[in-house]
Image 1 (cartoon, rainbow, N blue to C red):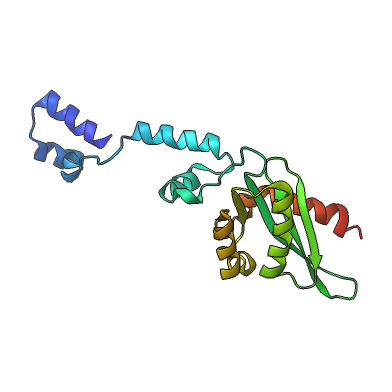
Image 2: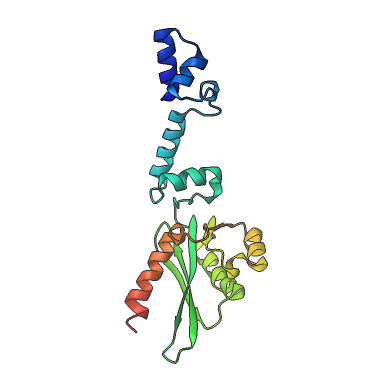
Length: 195
């Protein structure tokens, strides 16, 4: 806006750039600025396109994720495309803790597994995944948080061997694993809290 004002005044009054900038209180460097890279219209259209694809994010998060595109949530487009996995933790009536490993197919929203135990780690995760892959076919991706069970060397190597690409959600963003989080919330509300 300031730049256009200087150009307009210079054109109407035939004054020098230096004098016009001085009178209007505009830094002369403003007149020398050259925009680099993409124009703003293309950027705006790109952000709108991503906002339609990833509706749960605002423009700031989309702009941030465009810099680091693997972080953008990969949407499931067929059965066995993306499986979402997470843990639910609770305590028994005697105060003893236990965990539930939940696994959901993001496309069909089918709960493929709910594994319960007092100790669930990487080994138990593999024991849950292996029969599911035999029964349903292997998924292309498995989405999880960055918990130690999901990022362990054992799991990482096994996933690589069988050809499944892990998707780890952005730290502190459980909404990126929304299908599994919703299932876990329903499981807690309709079963665990009642019993």
